[in-house]
Length: 282
Ligand code: FAD
Image (cartoon, rainbow, N blue to C red; front, side):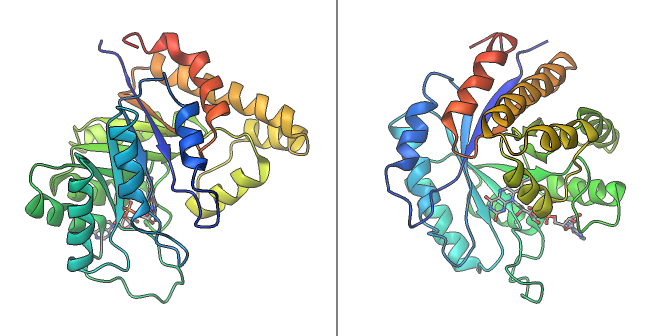
C-alpha cells in the first residue's frame, strides 16, 4: 500500500491584516513537506482576488512547495476567468481547484458558469496542461436533494476533467467512509483527500458548520460543551480529536489527508507531529 498524501490549506489574510501574517504562517509550516498547499479564493466584497496567485507564487518559489490555487466561478465571466488562469500560469501554478463558489445573497444570479463542472470543462479547454482539482461533500452538498443526487452531479464534474478531489470538512469518519464507498461504486476513480478541520475554537467551528452544513457528532458536541469557554483546553481537545481522526482514516486506507490550517501554524504543527509517523515517506 502506498503512503497517503498529505496537504494543507491556507487563506489570504484580510486586506486589513498586516501583510506579513501569511509569511508567519508559512514559516511556521516549514519542514512538513506536504504534497501541496492550496490557497483559497475570496469572492466577498472585501476580497483581493489577486492575492491567491501571489501567495501561491510565494509558496512555490520561496518555500519550494507545489501550490494549488482555488478559483470560483461565481461573479466571474470568461474574461475574468481567463485573466485569473493567466495569473496562475505566470505564478508557476500547475493546478487549480475549480469551484462554483457561493452567493453573497440568495437572489444573486449565477453568472456564466452555473456549476463547477462548467468551469472544469472551460479550464480543460483553455489550459489543457493545468491539473484540475475539485470539491466533494461526504455528507452531501447542502443544496443537493440527497447524497446520491450529489454523487451523480459529482460524477458529471469528474467526467468533465477533474484529476483530484478534496472533501469538505467532516467530524465523523463513518460518514466519510460511507461516502467513499458510494463514490467508488458510482465509478469515480480519481484520488480523494479527506478534509480535516481541527475543532480548536468553539465559535469558529459553529460558524464553519453553519456555512457548510456538516454535522457535529455528539462526541464533538460534548467537547464544545465541556471546554468551549476554556481556549487552552479546547485547543488541546481539538488537536487530539483531529489527530485521532487522521490516524483512523490512514489506518483504513484513505488516499490522503487535507488539513484546513485556518492559518494556525502552531495547531497544524502539533497535529503533524502526532501523525507524522503514519506518513512513511516524509
Ligand atoms: P458544484 O460542484 O457546482 O455543486 C454545487 C451544488 O450544485 C451541489 O448541490 C451539486 O449537487 C449541484 N450540482 C452540481 N452540478 C450540477 C448539475 N450539473 N446539475 C444540477 N445540480 C448540480 N468557496 C470559496 O468561495 N472559495 C474557496 O477557495 C473555496 N474553497 C473550497 C475548498 C473545498 C475543498 C470545499 C469543499 C469548498 C470550498 N469552497 C470555497 C466552498 C464552495 O464554493 C461551496 O461549497 C459551493 O457551495 C459549492 O461549490 P462546488 O464547486 O462544490 O459546486
